[in-house]
Length: 439
Ligand SMILES: NC(=O)c1ccc[n+]([C@@H]2O[C@H](COP(=O)([O-])OP(=O)(O)OC[C@H]3O[C@@H](n4cnc5c(N)ncnc54)[C@H](O)[C@@H]3O)[C@@H](O)[C@H]2O)c1
Image (cartoon, rainbow, N blue to C red; front, side, top):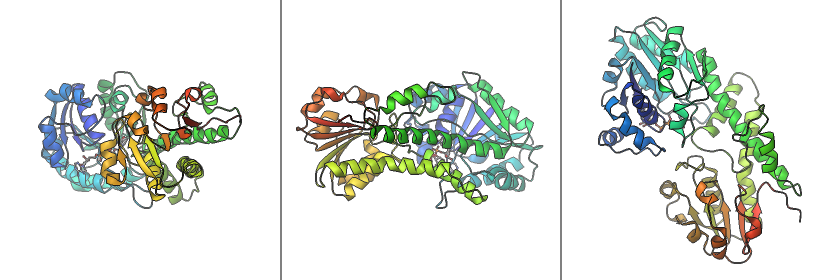
């Protein structure tokens, strides 16, 4: 089967490369000519583990095209993976998807063979049936369900593990206009996946709701663990890890995303949560869980800011370890560490920031307003407070005796993930979040 992938960004390029590596002939197209030139010249600007190697394996089957029309004409299924930015009202904008669909429709009008249009971008419930299919039918002058098929097929991947998540998904969600379209996309997964995931075929609307529901549920778990961390912290002798590691073993709960620590951020979780609330409001339902999840998430940064304010005066030097929205990723979009940095700068603290991979991205936003230090020990040197924000594996291997020697007696260490060995620290005054002190 020949595929075309429209949009070669963080998700699209991984998808195109993965499918090509699994034997599909893939034509990739992106409107950004700088990106496509780079890709054609063998340079990969998207940072994602294993993607460089995958692009080498994919090379014989992956063509980077200049022309969307030709890519569609010369393929059997088109995957659309373009941005759907959030609007001020919380809804996602469909403008980029509609631009692409307009061109896809024109190409379909010239095709005689059956073609499946597969939207992977995250869209609001109702978008496919109310906007996309009527648009395509008009521009292609063809009927959906007979001349072409339409599928909404969201991916449940996490940045940093995209390729692993693609190869072994827990499940596959296929919202489809008709059985033939669903079977076509199911067949792609059959060849692409290294496991045999359950495939859930459903209406387009159910798949649209399913995508938002899954992400919102995961964020609810994160906020639950963080609320529990606040409760444990105020209870002498309590330890959130003892509680979550046990309750996570119950199969009704599960232990993933159930560690008290920083809240959720990044390009998907916060906006999906807001979108589900906005959608609920738009149909006359007053949602309670998604807004509460968001509020608890916001509290994580509030608590850190308060603790710093209570212990260190403005003008003091604060070191922030871990700036990306999560460990394992260089992305800083909606990162709580970035929000904390901005709040502390407003309060006139002096900041040194460190991160294994995100410093270039941080520098683009914070510029000269903070100091950058890759080396953790140099970053700690002379700090009045150190905040351990992300559970990077590198931070789990910190030589704490060495870090402790870089600071003077009584330096505050806010340990969001309880990684530092409190009893071995002499100079640091460690405050492990989520643990209730007996003193
Ligand atoms: N990144 C993720 O982890 C993730 C996960 C699940 C779902 N999604 C969804 O996938 C979609 C894409 O996300 P992303 O993170 O890959 O975005 P991105 O911004 O990294 O990439 C989008 C790409 O689309 C290209 N593009 C824009 N308009 C185009 C057009 N008319 N024709 C061709 N290419 C065009 C852009 O140039 C860009 O390279 C969004 O709806 C997002 O919500 C992303």
